[in-house]
Amino acid sequence: MRRLFFCDVHLSPRETARTERFLRFLAREGPRADEIYILGDLFDYWIGPKHLRMPDYRGALEALSRLARERPIFFLIGNRDFYMSRGFQEATGVRVVPGRTEHCLSSGGKRVYLCHGEYLEGRTDRGFRIQEFIRSAGFERVFVRLPVCVARAMAEFYRWLSTRKPVRECRPCPAIVEAKFRQGADVIISGHFHDAAQQALCVDGRQALFITLADWAEGESYLVEEGGRWELRGGG
Image (tube, rainbow, N blue to C red; front, side, top):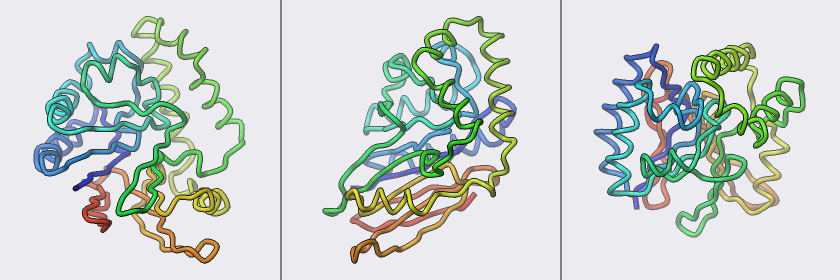
């Protein structure tokens, strides 16, 4: 079993070089994987079902759809592309994981916890409360009915708002990470922090592994798991 993990690609119509890099990556690494996990923020923003009919991400969606015919691809929503719907799953074959951007799987008898990572920060500030309101089901029902031009403008504003906090200030809260391990996780894999790292921990006398994935600002960054071994590649 070979599993492929990546996140924080932040595809954008403005970043054509990044899109081309991502398509080359999928063509090379995708067919070698038995399962693929996207841990959020694949897109710089996603305005809902209307985006499926727009040219912004057409190449990436078609590439993912081709891969999804031969292997399962799982998508955990991030803090930029959270209006993924059943329509996305039906159109591409990519399985959108429901709930608060987290998922568990088993590898070599170990429990692996996957998440985008924003909830590992433990934020309670005003910006986080705004984010939670925007992600609410009630707001989504209104947002997806807006004209495309209005939805785009709002998404661009939210994108700008979310970049006001420097990435270097985004860090996981050790207490929250340890709590996840105490709840039974042996391995935690997270995106969001834009930094590739592996940290071996000992929690209540038990060995644990915390892995964070980098973004794609400068290059490919991904994680491969095969036979219970974890290998970070690239590094942003």
